[in-house]
Length: 433
Image (cartoon, rainbow, N blue to C red; front, side, top):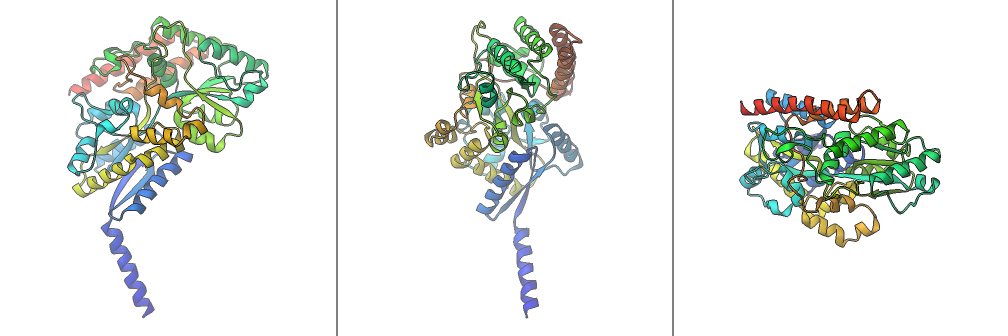
């Protein structure tokens, strides 16, 4: 009798599991952020019985995007794909591969108001016709971090971060004199030192309003201001004040470990810092050049959004819409923002966080928000280019030539533009086919 009851229970469990519609979600979040993603899926799954979100880590942003393209061609793409902002123009051009999120929500009869999302975030993922193409998820921006313990040891004010680039150089010199081997470093060279740098100084990174105005955009980061900044970084590198730690987010670990004292990188590093840093740290706005008119302006978006892949069944898209509705709830979005350092994706989640006193209790956590909610200009809305992954790789390669002293700042920037424009031209041609 017990055996029969056990078999019946197993059969019921199996039929119950089959009744759930599985939604595959590929992402690139590791460590503390991976735990956050898994918790979101777990909480959503526990709150209803119709759908089951299955999150799968697919490696770095580059790797997950490549894997998804291959999976789409093979007919087994995930329902939801996390794509970093650099891949936005490529996804927009992949019309047959994606379903605009606005369409997914409308078809599912889900509550969806693009105006509820933070404008600087939503605008980046919106097509010229006003349709939102992807769901804002882990949007970040560039901020300045500093090690308060290292500042104290060097005789610097622990409550005041450098606000200008000349002040960064002076602080780096004091840190070095105090015995610090890595006074300043940065992750994501192109994003922090050229893309965000350009917007922060209200200067174009590329023509056609940084790609928003058309596919015939070309790179423009060889202005006197850009050359001056890269020259200054190269001089700091020669003096041991700026230490290059590698491409992508390799440098993140060197700040979290205490090896490097000052750092520019993603606001999304906050979750890692909060959990692992063994020192006092401060979060501040990006430095700027005080003689540049219009600076500081606003920083540009980073992080990633969630794209819905095509070729799925209607019930599966309903599940995607239900999950996006859950992520948009003010309490859910506010909790995500506070846990990770990523931007609040909706205005309501920002207001909820502010009212809770979180920003007062955690100084610096509002920096990313205030940098992004300033009024944007045509020069500072963001950067949206085709083949952007390849362009960034070229910039990394050329800047490495500059840091090693093999090229001048001007030579490195001009070559990066020449090589990068070839990628833009290639994308322009392919998009027209």
